Image 1 (cartoon, rainbow, N blue to C red):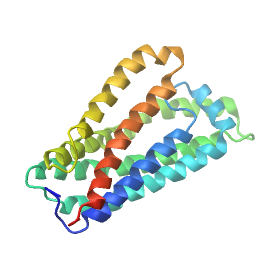
Image 2 (cartoon, rainbow, N blue to C red; image 1 turned 180 degrees about the horizontal axis):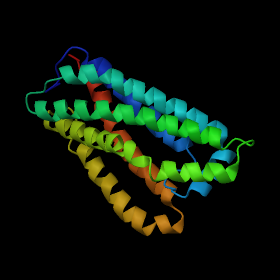
Image 3 (spheres, rainbow, N blue to C red; image 1 turned 30 degrees about the vertical axis):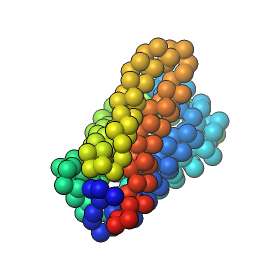
Image 4 (cartoon, one colour; image 1 turned 90 degrees about the horizontal axis):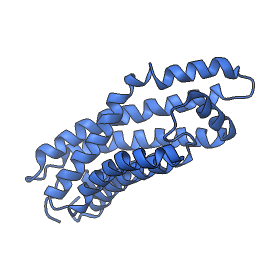
Length: 217
């Protein structure tokens, strides 16, 4: 396959598929996607505590798989897109840290929503986590999206995937902006959020699948 070389890129591809699947499934199980109100988040978590724990574990799996994929990505040197791939590997490494940190946030929400916890006090803490504490993880989350986009662009330039792969990121951005504006106020914020995350995850899994099946990967 054109543009594919580098020892370990096949394993990196399989790990990328694992990371993408675990990442999106983890968000699918999270009841508070697209919701920022602290009291509402705690209420939803309290009703779906098992789902939240499984979601957190899946995100830890995603972070681990993504981190393990980085060395293979770093050794993949497609001549047409070496800079794209190198940038993607660096950004996704930071993104893996952010996914793991976010998983711990979800574990914290699980504990805060247990029946014996003081809901009023926990709501104050959750509000801080959703506002004052969020900037600590936002750069890493942004790195995840930028890294996935850079990898999509590099894989397309290398001929590994079609141009529709990076276009998925443009579609995701349009869904986030337009869908969030029009459908968010109507109670469709969760669906919009899952669609955005699904498109980005699909792009990453697509690249991973092509890397994994490349004959010299």
